[in-house]
Each structure stands twice: as C-alpha cells, then as structure tokens.
Amino acid sequence: MFPDLTWNLKPKPCTEIFGDQDFELITIGCLISDMSKSFGQSDLGISSYVENLTSPEADPIWKRIRQSAADAGMPSIHVGEMDGQHLEVLSRALKPQKVVEIGTLAGYSGIRLLRGMNASGMLYTFEFSRMHAEVARRNFVNAGVAERTKIYVGPAIEQLPQIEKYGPFDLVFIDADKTSYPAYLEWTIKNLRSGGVLLADNVFGWGGIAENMATDPETIASVEALRKFNARVVESGQFTTTFLPTAEGLLFAVKN
Image (tube, helix red, strand yellow):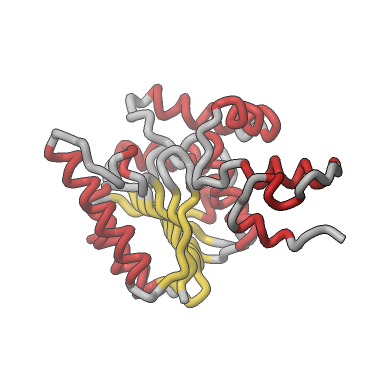
C-alpha cells in the first residue's frame, strides 16, 4: 500500500517519505512534489506551445479587426490572442444573455464575447471615442453580429444609466480607463445579477500592482485605482473572486 499522498501539501525529500523503495510511480510522485505550483506561467516555451496548439486567431476575422484598427490609427491595445480566447471560452461556458462591455475599441473583445453568448443575447458596449466606435460598428457588421450589439459613445460612467432598465446583467467586462475602474465596479455591484460574472482586464497594473515603480503621474494614478478596484472586489463580500494570471491579469469574479 502506498503512503498517504497528502504529503504533497508539505513536500519532503523522497527518501524521507519512501526510504529505499524503488517504484517508478513513487519516483514520479516525488518529482511532482518538488515542482513549483506557483501562481502564473512565465515559461515562454509553454506559452508558445499553447498558442501553437490552440491557434487562437486561426479565424482571419481577428487579423482583419486588428488591421482595421491600425488603418484607422487606433492604439494597439486590444486584448492579446490568448486573452481573446479566454473571453470566448468563458462566454461559451456561461452562455450569457445580457452582457455589458466597458471599452469597445475596435470590437475585438466584444465579438469574442458575442461568439459565446446565447444566439439571442445582446451586447451593450461603451466607447469614449466616436471614431473608435465607428470602426467597431463596421467590424460588428462584418462579423454578422451588428443586430445583437448596442454601442454607446461618450464617458461610460455617464452613459451606463441608460441601460439599467435592461438589467440585471449576466456578465460585465471592464477594459477601459483604469482610473474609472472603481466607479465601474460600484455600477456593476448594483446591476449584475446574483451568479453573474465580472471580468476585468489589466488588473496587474502592467506589473506594478504589487510595487508601484511608475514615475509618471498618469500611470501612478492608474495603478492606484486598480489596487483600489481589486481590493474592493475581494473585500466587499459581494463576489467570489480569482485572478487569472495572464500577462496583464484578468480578474474573474462571480456575484454572490
């Protein structure tokens, strides 16, 4: 009989646990016990393996959206390839009917979410820039999802009250101006249904969330706002929360 494998919770040297027993399975178990179970994945080889295996942008529509944004002179700040894949997979698992997206940009993340939503689902998406919203509108048309999309232009915190009559909502995705994340959270708490999901991108503050080393005032303010946002989500008692260790950090919280 093998020893109780709960030893894995406090890894010990193999010889201390098994003595001189020489079983291949035990050897494998010892190797596993010595492996790091740390939060995150920084191995570039593994990252390349996953990207090559899943081909997150095999559909040419994603390249076309990125190109449309570049042609319009928009900043290249879309979610990454795997981040887009995360959004689509999560949306397919949740099958939300009513989704709010704060930060449309060129429509990339919105279309990812729409692909996983119920066929009759509606995306309410908010974009500060009218020019960005027009690029997104064309991309929604080209993707065949325009009839399931409502775009609101202007400061999101001023526009959000317009859709409260359609709530409560099943999913809220925040990927916009970082200093407004705390305000977007308060709106979300009031308008997300129990069991609904909050997703928020960039919550690691470009690597500065643990120790803010920024020197420019704008970045300092953004990181401090993200810290406030993260703490409020976790400590409010309103959510059960985890952080997906993407490069920029994706907060994933379920409303209690």
